[in-house]
Each structure stands twice: as C-alpha cells, then as structure tokens.
Image (tube, rainbow, N blue to C red; front, side, top):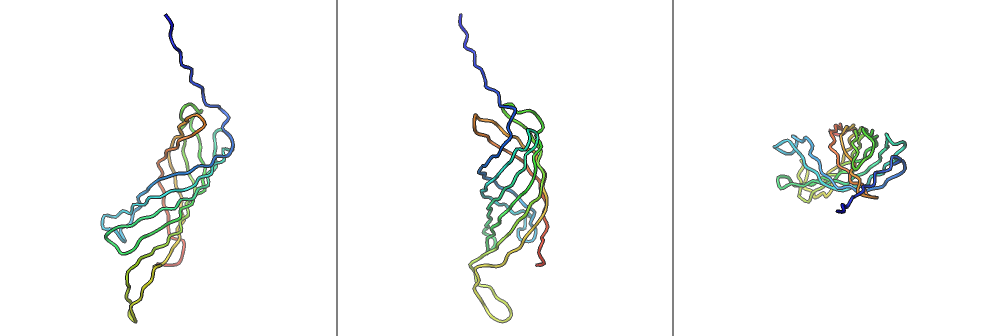
Length: 168
C-alpha cells in the first residue's frame, strides 16, 4: 500500500529585513469625561513599517487613523496615533512566532461638529472644536502567523497616554 506524505516547508530562521504592512484595528479608551459608561471606542486603519534587525528583535514605526462618533454627543473625534517601539521574539519561527512589544505612543486629536454653540457674547457655528496632543507608552503580547510569503499579525496592547499640551 502507498501512503501520501505531506512535507511542510519550515520558515527560514533568517527573517531579517524590512516589512511594510497595512493594519485594521480598534481600541477602547477610558473616557468618563464624555461617555457615561466610561469608555470611548475607536476604529480605523494604518500603516506599519518593521525592520527586523536581528532574528530576535524588530523595530516598529506605525501610524493609524482612528475615529469615533456616538449618538449621545454633538461632535466626532479623529486621531492620528503613531508609535515607535520594539518587538522581542520569544521563540524560533515555525508556523507562528510569539513576541512581546513595547514603545512610545503619540496621538494628535481633532474634534469637530456641526451644531451651533453659544458663549456669553453670541451664537456661532464652528466645524472645528479644537485639538490636543497626547504622549505615552505601551506594552503588548502578540504572534506572527506565517502563511507562505505572507504574515498575519495579531496583538493585544495596553497603553497609557497623558495630554502633552497646555489645554485643559
């Protein structure tokens, strides 16, 4: 009798080089200032550049455009969230490879609306309601899943930011 044998090609141990990728994601942030349930949910997309310096380490540069809107307020919010960080790979590459990540976060936020607003002097209409910046850090745990020449990445990150401008 004959038996068919499937040979799985292993992932190369030398994965150094530059990678460019698109990403789609979402995150929740603590926001008891605006939403009564204390959360703010964002969604968006971005571009990531990774440079695998040595097989165990990568440097990451990324920028995401995220947005949130809700029925319970008269404005929307758009952020450009950037990160600069590093990834340390926990194992040799196989069909997947786990890693930890850490780095710095920067965020520029623009709030805009389409309602009339009132101050002590007069009513006015203003599309842009202001902007602010934030700076902080993050840490995460993730995995790369190898699909031939393609790589699927999934990660859970925890971050913290504080306003870095003088506005209240």
